[in-house]
Length: 243
Ligand code: ADP
Ligand code: IPE
Image (cartoon, rainbow, N blue to C red; front, side, top):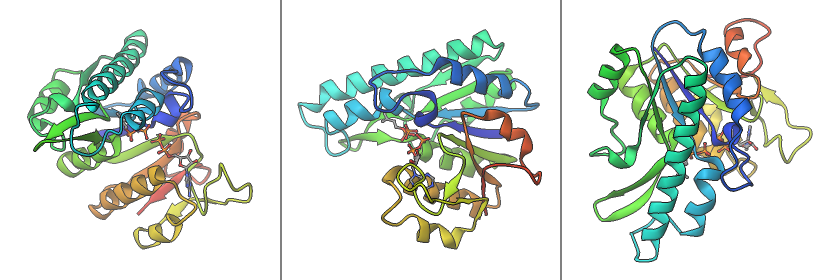
């Protein structure tokens, strides 16, 4: 089994509300079509999630004013999910959307149901979403779901597709001299998640390191160049392996 996350930075333009990158998504699906065996997909929110979640202050206790936000962010995320499934269908991949806001516990995906979908030849596609638990509302990120799914299913490998070539010693978007790190070890992660690393990448590194510690190979690859997944393990591979 392979577990793969499509970062919101790859499939949307993060600064433009609800701007879906259909062609980029199609290119990724084109590569996924060639994967033999079971695949579970997770996707992030990008501009379908983060913009309104921030606007409505979604992460603490539910306030009256955030009811709107919960509904809006969920609608937008389901919409993004269905856009992805539509692209998958056009490529001959059969995805089935699984919104965490409908899971009894959003942080524990329904593993048996996922297994049943896999057995039926479907590709479960879950995603960052809103949730309400113990009276608190919040956002569960695709990265949280990756950790739960990797821990449970122990896939052969876990791939995070983002909009950068891998993990750098500093944020490559703000530092032109940033250097790509082909390999990051768990205990180095905290050195590079300092002030130059956004919360987004910091959290991702944390999750990737936990998955790697469970003995599962984890890779960060540029989703704009999805064919690179076939270079994993080769000398010319461009990306970062976390171990
Ligand atoms: P995604 O939406 O792909 O899940 P995020 O947008 O949360 O991911 O994180 C990816 C972003 O993290 C990149 O666009 C990059 O600007 C930023 N980033 C910050 N620090 C680093 C770093 N050290 N190496 C690579 N990317 C970094
Ligand atoms: C965020 O999920 C989901 C919402 C904001 C609703 P992620 O945190 O996984 O999204 P990206 O990949 O960073 O965009």
